[in-house]
Every structure is written in structure tokens, then in C-alpha cells.
Length: 357
Image (cartoon, rainbow, N blue to C red; front, side, top):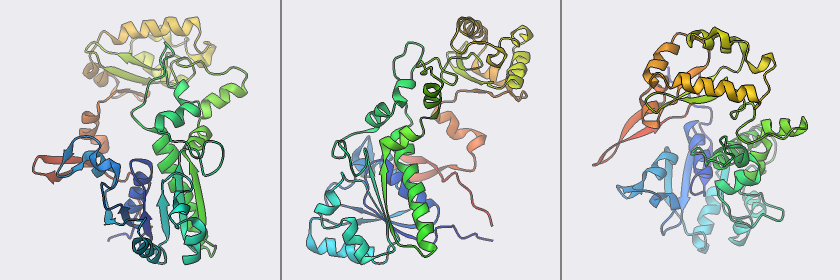
């Protein structure tokens, strides 16, 4: 029996570019919505040519725009604007990611769109929100996570911020927050309410999720980069280099997992040196124990440690490379290879949320 996806019948107009908006609308498409991606008649979405281009489009563009219908409109042209306004009348959602005020200048602002469709949900994704002193400033993921205090905490023992290759500002702050707002507004409309304008500030969304550093500040001891509970301050929650230059992720945060980990390591003497038993986070004993574990993990390869921990339920796992993760049985249900062009196939990762009747 085929189960109809929950957003079947929902029509979305996607005016976004690059990463945050396209990922948000892609997930709406994954959940059954009809998504019409509207680009200008020229180069279109900048993502089309970011990175190597194969078959006239980059893998970046392919990765974040599956399941959409493509359309070209020049929104500076009166006839094309009217065509978009006509589409708005039958749409449920419109998503844009221009700087604040651009849609108004085009004659396509919220007040205009809701007159054409009072039940429309319009979502605007921007770096710093529609109002305030930073509203008109340009920015990218690195700027958003920098302002929100997240980048400062994403550091090693030397305190130097490391750039994550998971774009927290774009994907958590932008895509996921937009999804949250859009779906909430759609529920309100379906319950008989009016349409809504959803204002997503990527920087504010990252700030709202910067939980552990906030906890540290409220406890009167601001987190030291690379030395907090979840950033390297305790040996039981850390990464360790193996004999072949790979890494194991030790997440034995709870005492029971740490004790099981020590059994696999054949070091029961280490069991009392857990942070829950009085060890100071980031303290001298934590540093000394981390040094001991570094020497211990360096005695075997990644494969050997993976095998040793395979039957132990203690939150210790290998740090996989992306190409290894794509082939791992854990992701069998969401990873596939699809034809892309004459040069070969492309990996595709499907919507991870499953719906059952």
C-alpha cells in the first residue's frame, strides 16, 4: 500500500539560492509538496556553477534541488512579475532569501502577496532578520556562527576556531528554522487561520541553539574553547588517533558506558577516573588521563578498535570518512547512487524522516 506523503497537495514557490532556502524547500518536496524553483533567466541560482560543472550543472546544485520543477522568470519585468503573482494565488508557500526590502522593491512584498492570497505563508530567510541594525549586511555561515558564539566554541585544545564542514548557520539556522516556521504557519492556516509572514534570522537561530555555552555562562564559568564537557574537557568524550592515523570517537559520557569502555580497553583501573566521580572538567587529571588514552588508542588500527568495540554498548565508534559513511550499512535506506551524466553516477541521500500509516 502506498502512503500519501503528508504535504501532498501543498504548492511551494521557491525563490531562494545557494544552500539554506534550497535545502528547506527540498525537504518540503521530500515530504510531498510540489515545489516550483524560480530562477532569473540569466545564470540563475549561483549554486549551478559552484564547484566542478558536469552536464551543465554542479553537484552542489544537484544535491540541494531534487524533486523540484524548474522555471525561469525575470522579476524585474512587469509581465513576469504578474505571472508570479498569478501563481501566488494558487500557492500555499513562498520562500525567498533576498536581502530585506528586495521583495518590496520588486513589488512583491508581503503586503502585496497577501492581498492576492490571504492564506499564503511567506518565509523570508536572511542572515540577521528583517529588522535591526544588521538587516542590510551581507554574510555567510562563518559570520552567523561567529556572531552567535558557536564558532568560538568549535575549537581544539589550542583554542583556534575550526571551520565545520556542516554549515550550522545555513542548515540549522536557515533551512531547519525555515521548515519549522513554515510548517507551523501551514498548520495554523489549515486550522482556519490567516496566512503568516515567517521571518528567519539565521544568526538568531544559531544563538537560540547554543545551549551548552549558555549553560556554562549561567553557571558562572564561561566555557573554555576545547575544554568544556562536550568539547574535549573530559577524556570520556573525545576523539583519539589510532595506529594508522585514523580516529575513534569515544562518547562514554555516562558512568556505565565509561566502565564498559574501560573493560574493552582492559584498563579497569581507569573506571574511578570519570567526570561523574569528581574529576574536574578540563582539570589536570582529565588532561593526564587523556594523554594515557591517546597512547592506548595509538597501539591499534581503526579496524582493530572498531572490531574490539563492536559488541560493547558503550558509545565508542569509528570516525568515518564521507565516502565510507555513504557505503555503511547504517545508511542503506537513505543512500543511493543515481545516474547523473556520461561521466558516471552521483550519490544521493534521501529525506531521513520516515512516515508510516
